[in-house]
Image (cartoon, rainbow, N blue to C red):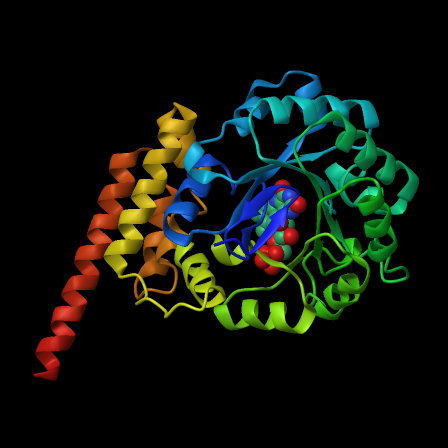
Length: 337
Ligand SMILES: Cc1cc2nc3c(=O)[nH]c(=O)nc-3n(C[C@H](O)[C@H](O)[C@H](O)COP(=O)(O)O)c2cc1C
């Protein structure tokens, strides 16, 4: 079934995995797709300058697996020529969609005129979109914030110009750049964008549950719901949201065993991807403990997990944690009899 199209690309359901630096890399996306099944996923952002200077580490971000399609690669930069060059490199790498970042607010990005800084320069932003659209044959999309600061809700005017320049989907993270992640995303801004955006519109910001996702769709009229933080180390959140959006019955929550197995699978995929066990373990230091977050005893295990240097050590700590939870459950059952 097709929920909507991005240019000619059919998107099977309305759930979209957000681009997230250091998170939505190939191993994470593989797990997200297998368990959560979002209709569309984006890579973490890729620096146009890094591609221009042939940074090996950045080229790795362009590796795509067929099972994760349709996939968008997101790029960022503040200069027309390097953005065009990078767009071509990404298209050659085989992505289905090319996304331009105009939402990143962190100083290291905006000080180069990239990301959300482009919201302050509509002519340059439009020229980048227009030139990138002409440079590649795949659909080009743009992810924006509402504007730079509260004084100007710039996104609708920009979105109109991007559409005219050939953008095939607009994503709105419903916060202003100056906000960072503070406050609540204001979904009324997505509704206001709906009035002007005729290409598909993806809404983004603070969707954590199936109820949130359903509410965003009905309240704003957007075509897709993009989910970021709720999906980190929790592909079941994606699954639950997708099932609701497809009108399907919910599935039981994952067991602790499922969480541990998936954390280890994620680590295994990361080791393959990095080709370096220590690097992979370090990369996932923050994310592995999040798989068991909220379970009794998880907080104590966290410290031990962050000190592990190998797959076997992580497996041992998680194995002991599992045993511990089983014993606790047995004690509870015995005491209930
Ligand atoms: C760790 C992290 C990394 C992020 N990296 C990117 C990025 O590379 N490109 C981008 O457009 N947005 C990035 N974002 C923003 C998300 O795509 C999304 O807009 C934001 O998290 C709001 O959605 P959420 O409330 O569902 O998390 C990042 C967010 C997080 C938490």
